[in-house]
Amino acid sequence: MGSQWVGHGIYKSHCICSGNNGTVVVTANTIACLPERKRERSSVASLSSIMGNGHFTVLMAFRFPCEPVSVALSALNLAIQFHGWVSFFILVYYKLQVTPSKKTYYEYTGLWHIYGILSMNSWFWSAVFHSRDVELTEKLDFSSAVALLGFSLILAILRAFSMRDEAARVMVSAPIIAFVTTHILYLNFYNLDYGLNRKVCVAMGVAQLLIWAVWAGVTHHPSRFKLWVALVGGGLAILLEIYDFPPYHGFVDAHALWHATTIPLTYLWWSFVKDDAEFRTSSLLKKER
Image (tube, rainbow, N blue to C red; front, side, top):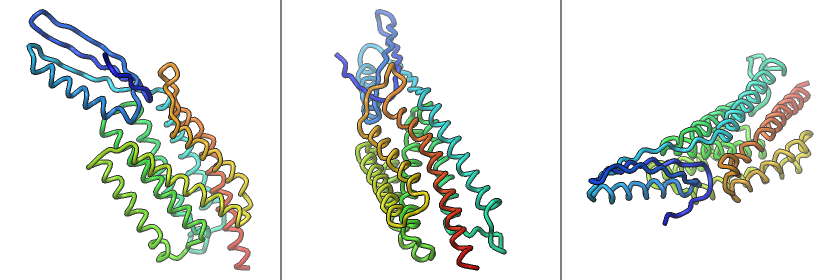
């Protein structure tokens, strides 16, 4: 009797058992969720060891899950992130007024560039992971997502408290960077703890959602309603990561739906970022006159 794993992706285990009485080929399809994949790999390794010590030899090959829906949505998210970042770049450098030294008036331009690069990197590894789930791609996917969330939290704090001084930025960023780096090293070299990683990611995600929401309300930012819509949508999307359900017909599960919801939210988010750049640039130019 086998155990039942429910969650992301379909695994196909192909076993060839060669014994004194002939050869048996067994193919098993197993639906597996992220927290159980590592356990499944360990179980397979143990099974191979046990059967290899008997009167027959076991050769096992894995065709790891390919989740076409998640792959396609991850690639689309990557494209939307690229479009948002490029449109932001064109806005601040070619459409808005710049300083005589060709620098932007918007004080957070560099931070948003880093955010855009980390976002595209995260969605790239998400697409790779969902197309070929092995330990390396899994760790790269998790690590890039944690790095993005950590930097997003830093960016939220710096923008909400209008930190323009480099020393203040370093003081805020250093402990968060240290924590995120330690967490990534822990996942990669000590224990790929799915439960702990989910708690860390949700905590950083919720923290920045609250910071942005309160800041927009307190400052009466002209694009606060656009920001609030993006934040509410992001908060609801997090629920899809917390409350998972089995894939529908083996293709669409909660994680895939989360990928789908982030596409319009990403477009709306970059729209807010561009609005913020225009607002700050306009405010600073008025002060100079």
